[in-house]
Structure formats: structure tokens, C-alpha cells
Amino acid sequence: MTEVLTHDSPRPGQTVSSKPQGHSVLRRERRAGLLFVVPFFATFLLFFFLPLAYAFYLSLFREQLVGGTVFAGFDNYTKAIQDSLLWGGVRRTLLYGIIQVPTMLALSLLIALALDSGKLWASKVFRIGVFLPYAVPTVIAALMWGYLYGPDFGPFAQIADNLGTSAPKFLSHTWILFSLANVATWSWCGYNAIILYAALRGISPEQYEAAAIDGCGAIRTAWHIKIPSIASALMLTLVFSIIGTLQLFVEPNIFQTLAPTVIGPDFTPNLYAYTTAFTNQAYGYSAAISFVLGAFIVIFSYAVITISARRARARA
Image: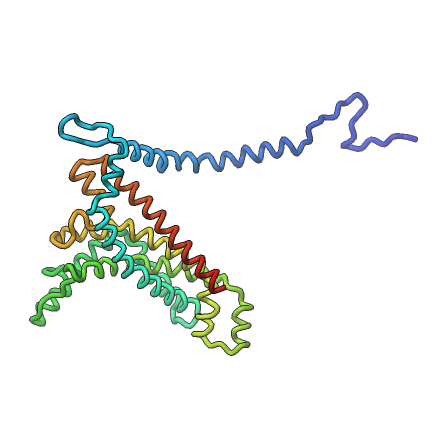
């Protein structure tokens, strides 16, 4: 019988490689994958991990008049944990968050539901208009609202002067948290609304059909179908908002020049850390404050996520 040699068959005297060809292909794919991953890790190491490590290094030292910079160990952390000014700023920031976060998320949800309803006139223009404040830098937004809040030169002050009344005290002790919350809500409401709107667009049409068969109107559909279906997106925006609240810095820093008797250097934890570093030249203690605040943010955010998840399981 004549042996038929195919293209893949080994010829007489030819050795067959024990390694399959797929092995080399797999190695090339892995090298290609590493080439895509390495730039990210290099950037992460250069711009995040190394500055963080250097800040931790600074937090272990203390600046003093006699002797200069000396090693302090964890004394800066002990001092920060016991610092009443720091925790007073944390309490003030949490109170601000109680005002701002629910208001912003409620408005964002209403905007997202309105967009998803498909009944808005010029919905694309409305969507761009809602999202546009997010494109304005926070510093510019704070300067703009600071002009509007101005007790002497703002439009509200001019209107009040023309009417013969006193100007609204937007920057007083009573209203300062509301004024700051208004700036943050104006800036971030559209951003959160777009996230929630994208989540609403991912709901299965079969759920709407089932709700229509059951006779649910628009409000009942929104309450029983839409909102429960985007619970994960709501949780995401909630956690981001909490983190952003505890990092409050730009708005009070800009408003400090307008209301120096209301907004002090310890008004928020970030403002306190900034003042400690660049005014008092206590870089080590400022770094320790930042790490303590970061740990508090992680613990607080984790607690919120855990409590919300337990309540969701309990309702289920």
C-alpha cells in the first residue's frame, strides 16, 4: 500500500517538534498583553504610588524651630487623631453632605427619569444643558457663584439695593453650607443624571411590557421598575458623592476671601491640611492629616455600602 504524504505529515528523516505551535502563539499573545498593561502600571507607579509613598515618608517627620526636621515616627498620626480642629472640620463636612448629597441625587434621578420618559421637548438640547455645568472647572464655578453671592457687588445685592432692602446673607454662618451645597449641586447634578440615564437605558423592554399589562402608569413604573433596576447605579453615585463631599476644598477656599470670618482655615479637613502645609509649613503633619482623612473616607464609604447592601438583601 502506498503511503500518502500530506502537507502536515513529517517527511522521512524529519524530526517532529515536541512543542505545539500554539505554545509560541500563546507566548506572543502574552507579550502583547504585557505591552498594553505596562504603560498603565508605569503611569500608576509614577503619578500615584510614588507620590503617596513620599507623602507617607513626610508624615513620619516633624518640623521644629530647634533642630529642623526630625524623625517623629507615628506621633503626627497620634496628634491628628486627637486634633479637635480636624474632626470639627469632618463634622462640618458631614453636615454639608447631609444637605447636598440627597438633594443632588434626587434632582439627578428626576432629570434621568424625565430624559428616559421620552416626553421632553428638545431632549438632546436639555441633556447637553444639564451636563454643561460639569464641563465648567470647579474653580470657575466657585468664582462665578461667589460673584452671585457677593453682598456688595453681586446681582442679588444690586436688586436688594434697588428695592431698598438688605442683601441676602448667602455667606453668613447660617447659610454658608447651603450656598456651598448649591455650587456642588449645580456642578455635579448633570454628571450623575447622565450615569443614571445610561443605567435606565439598559433596562429590559420586557419589564415595561409586563408593567403595562398590569396597568401601571408612568409613576408606578418609575417607582416599581425603573428605580429598583438602577439601584447599583444609585449606589455608585452615592459613594462617589460621599467621597467628593469629604474631599471638599475648592469652594470654601474660594469663598474664604469673601467670608473670612465664616470660613476659617479649618473649615474642611482638606482646607485644614492645605493651610497646615503651605501656611504653617508643617508638611509632615499635613501629610498625616491627609492619610487619616483617607482612612476615614475608606471606612465611612465601606460602612455605607455594607449597610445599603444589607437593607437591599432584607427587602429582597
